[in-house]
Image (cartoon, rainbow, N blue to C red; front, side, top):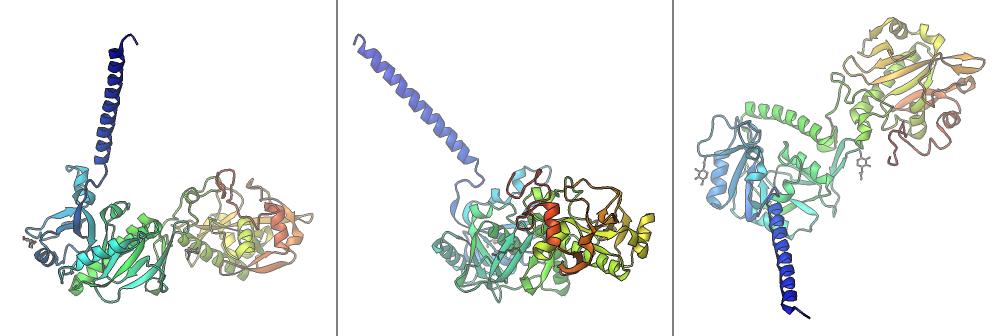
Length: 484
Ligand SMILES: *[C@@H]1O[C@H](CO)[C@@H](O)[C@H](O)[C@H]1NC(C)=O
Ligand SMILES: *[C@@H]1O[C@H](CO)[C@@H](O)[C@H](O)[C@H]1NC(C)=O
């Protein structure tokens, strides 16, 4: 030990370095923490009023009722358009960004500083004044899976089960059975949730608020609980006939836009019926040109939108009816025969329907004769045409919506069904005519259709031994059902 002091100095230097490192790391960590969208939330509740109509509302009364009884509450009125005429003394957060404003100005989360938020519909009063506190207590006491507390703000608040299927573009409601947690409620409600939860959602304030929240919550497995014994007095608004009418029109448009944004094309079971938000005869087909037999929705983990399946079934029924009426011999081909064999319907990710026909029978059908020369719109709006892609016919759902049934003409040669040109798909091959002698009737797409006899044998020959039992996407080299 020639220099004990040197060792002590070295040790001290090292210690200083470690301390400095720790300090700079700590500073960075705090800076990162500050970038979180909701910094240092204080206890308390922010009341967000989103469900009101700018043209006929009760915001001044709502403000009075809530703030008189609870002066410490913060009220945030959020809207796409400002109330007109303006209400003096009431500030409204405009949710549409303006080019001259910072982006945070139109984001509701930058105006929320409390841990809890209550979403309160217009016309609601805070009476007695402890209603929100009771909801907050119930939310704190609820199991962690409950993320939304719902209190009645009108008659008939009911607990519903909600199943949202991204793959099938559907949201299905049904009454919840006893002991089952709610996934949604029907009836007007005040909703309370943690601010962090609300603003974790990509569409926190989309309208209609309840439907949009419950669908996003269902996708995260969040439960909803009804706050028993908590009920807010409420006067439904708008109160005039004209105002109600305008409000209903607006709500229909908002609902359609929100369901599209959420990827829901079919809502079942709310008010007993089915509501469709997808394509129709008047709109375009809801997916683009299919490349490599793999439609775009498959890459997004989704199957054929339900509106498209419905349109395909309708087109198939129509074409089958016309062919049968004219005595044209036809049969289910390719993927359509495969779907019929598996479950009597179109394959749930298929994008068209294929039928084979006898070439020599084309002359029997006016629609096909018309299509040969160009294109023909029939009395029910379906479009018959010669396909530009090759030697076959195509029947489209409508002039705007190009969902279609393809008709492939075959002719017999030495006991084998053949065509003059082929698509190049492995399953598009010649086959013995004996499969068509005779044809058989099988269930397809909610009706019946003609099919080859011994169709399972034919399918195994064309698609492979296991093709019926082990479903696979149409082009597994591009995208396989079992992952790429
Ligand atoms: C809202 O309530 C507060 C507190 O009672 C009051 O000062 C304010 O004027 C009210 N605003 C309107 C527009 O009524
Ligand atoms: C949820 O809905 C989808 C689409 O309709 C359906 O296939 C699935 O079976 C449903 N799941 C439950 C648990 O009800």
